[in-house]
Image (cartoon, rainbow, N blue to C red; front, side):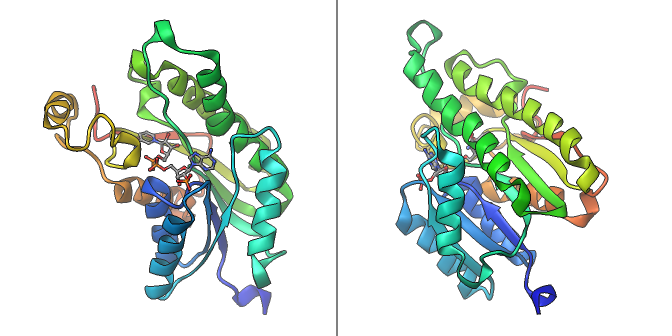
Length: 254
Ligand code: NDP
């Protein structure tokens, strides 16, 4: 009977933005999706409800990532919510949750640096480390990096440092897990219309006017467009791709 169960995917930060779009895309791909969230239970519930309405399967669970014990707490919360899926191995793990703290280099505090490192970089490490035995051989890990690693943007230096670490994490983990046929890749989104960019971009035509000429495709990206790349990396079609970060910036500052 276990063989008939849909494969399992977990998406961190699946309650909003790129994570929510990824959860919905993976559900359409046939996964039962575990939708992780940090604080926005209503948003996570909405994603789960939408997936179920479309005939898919999903459940949500809460885990704060801004803490040193984020890895074990994450899987405890997952187990408590997994119901009859508990014990089934995961085929796919998407490390998407993240925060961007902006500010001039001169004023950037060590608190901001450390908070971003904890959430964007340390938590994915701890979640994967504590979850390695839960992954199927032949499974997939996809990490969400950022186009900022290629495009110098002083206002988000602390953030960018965490995403460069994610690229290194991706490459090294790919080497480490290859013998289990687990692939590890990342996607580096450009400017995507999500809450993360609400502050400076949404409803700010001037900011939009400024960035569009720097994007070959001439427009801001959507969360679904990143979800589609993640879906490819999670699919069987990408089975011989590992340790790689795919640029999905619409051709930003080429
Ligand atoms: P959003 O701000 O829209 O969503 C962030 C998600 O991460 C939410 O689901 C949130 O959950 C979760 N999260 C944030 N902080 C924590 C925390 N401390 N503990 C647990 N969960 C947390 O972000 P995006 O969808 O825009 O970004 C997703 C990923 O894509 C991030 O890693 C980001 O760095 C990356 N990215 C985004 C780009 C963009 O332009 N939008 C560009 C390049 C990369 P909750 O709301 O429940 O707390």
